[in-house]
Image (cartoon, rainbow, N blue to C red):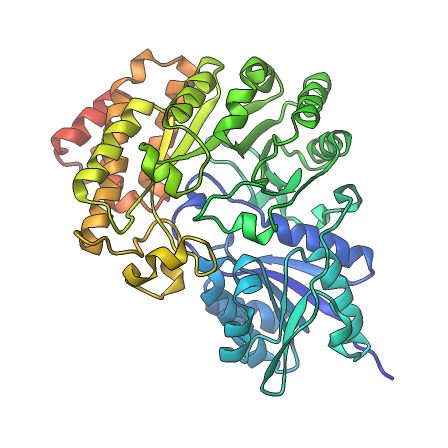
Length: 496
């Protein structure tokens, strides 16, 4: 029996919503880990981050034509799945023999719909992809029966075949990410010009019950972690070999195990890497670690996102956050006291909400006073618990808009345009208010906030609403008198 030697290309869809790219370019962490497992198994792998390159679908076509991969693996979330399937379609048009594979949260849950309606997709990988991708390549190369591969779905004639799920990897320390595939000069954190940014996973999973979230479902409410020594060793090696000086943790809750987390902090302080760390965690872990927060800062942790989500108890209970309203404000105050940038989000646009409700949320966000606040449109992932309760209010089935920026749900008493306007009102009002207090901030935070406003105006999805502030900068061609609110913002930042 002849075998095929796969030339595997790992691809990100060329999708943009103007969210994460405002702060920098973020390497596709999941594909780097899958690439490492494929390389260890002896396969030839390339990484094509079409998203970071800001490539178009025609650029994707040209890349496939030049490189001629015979396996294309694409990682998708709900917002990117449409473009992910377009990538597969183009791969098939360029070479009908190409094996096209989708993975990620959306394909994991929506595999039957995708395979039934989109012939350009050959295989879907469920859950974690490291072991399954290797087993899939082994079977495909040998022309073996794909039923032997656990953790996939594929078409057989007109039928969709689903094999038994593969268990999660028990020991995450065995994974070797393919950092050699990464063009490091393409990844940088904009608030630190000249920086080299990595995205790293120190743990996987989530045991919480948030009704709007996909992660707890994807990970089956499990949680596993890389050992403290292994994780810090990875950061040290990336700093030494690739010049990485900013790291974002991809984890949902890196701080879940307090003993392990304390050990990580000790190792980071001991090795003094000079690496800035950005992470997300839960409000209750920040409250738990009140006595450790000074150690966070000494360990290099500069920026923490916590999901406050709502400013009234009824909404928090609906979202199953298992928090009290006052907990979020307290966590933000604790981070501020330790010179850690605090970031949070407020979810708006539920069916029962009114414009007045949203305006109250905006005012309360000012009272919470994080350094950064995002006002997000509630997004009904079609597989999340929240979906059933809001599906009659969904205004569009265009998954490209399921990005937390575009309103997808139409409240009973508002139009979609009114929701969109309230979301932008939140950003405008919050940051105008924030900048008015700029002079009371430490100098380093003043510099950060000024940089942040430039990023919003030039690189984010807010640039159409806030971006014309750039025209009020001294010396900018076509400068014109600002609106009253924008003038106060300009003055507070020191541009007047």
